[in-house]
Image (cartoon, rainbow, N blue to C red; front, side):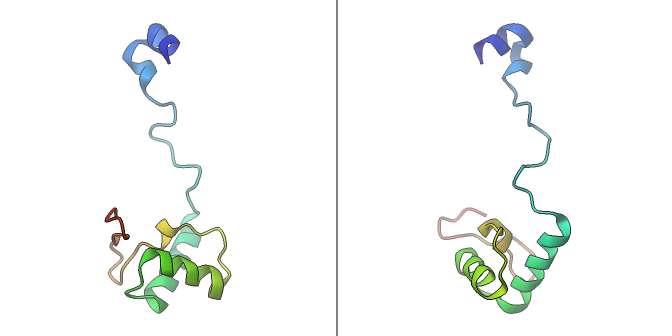
Length: 84
């Protein structure tokens, strides 16, 4: 980190990944499919329980709990720690 600062100044401290999509991002169509299931079957469920149901009943393995964080209106819902 020090070398990057010496070579490029303050710009060297900024992550090279800044502005790029996350490596863990789900494809848009798959994410919409997951959100449709959550909106249809799991209204009122918290993200953890919705995630468990998606894995157990729908066979959707590579789904993060973040994908299940949606309410009926499509807005993000808070988990038990209060983070959206």
